[in-house]
Length: 101
Image 1: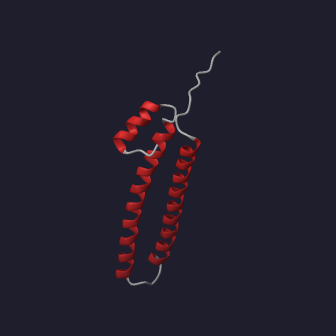
Image 2: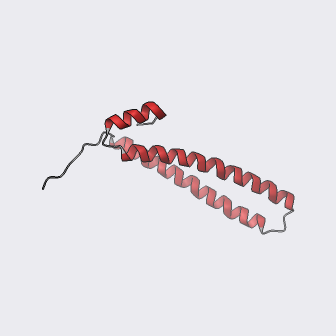
């Protein structure tokens, strides 16, 4: 029984960089979680409705922007890690999307 082994084309440093990107995304998600907790306190307080709506609008804008950025960043990390043994696909990705291999 033989195993089909492939060689990685990403360096250890490039793989670690992808890990750092995931850690940054996780920190941003934690910040959004904390922001949502604050919003729940504001929405359940006796604060005037105009302030609540303004705060909610700011919160939703932030969530929308941050999730869009996180989604794009995660897409890039996933592609690089899933194609870590395929130089041709990594080069194609880099040409098409400016990947950071």
